[in-house]
Image (cartoon, rainbow, N blue to C red; front, side, top):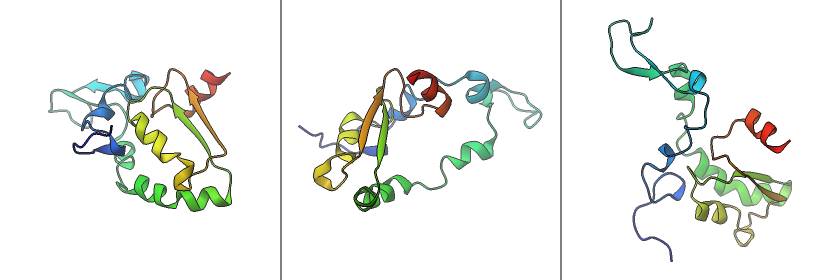
Amino acid sequence: MESTGPRYLFGSTSPFSFLSLSYAAYHPQKFGFRELPTLIYPDKQGVTLTCPKSQEAACYRDRFAARRMFQFLPAICSRVPVHVIWGAIDDSVASEVKERSTDPLTGRKMASIQRIEGVGHLVSVCSLCTSTV
């Protein structure tokens, strides 16, 4: 039975689902927080991201890219083989959203679907390569 409540990012029923496990697996010196003050914020207290603001902002430039991608996915799947790699941890994309997004009845017939154990949505390419060796 599907939830009748509001839907958030990628169909999740929790507005904070992306905060749970996604970022916890990242290397803290590259993708974590660092204490202030810093050269950029010499008069501030608290924490800031270790990555540059421009890098973080790049993640949020196009809020509707995923929705557009799912609209065009049936046409793409009918023309070229599409391979999907999901992280087995449902931290950002709910399992029911993963199932709907790769449902062949919607025209989204994938060439293959793989699940990588021990990783979530924001798995880096390097950790993906080392986890499959």
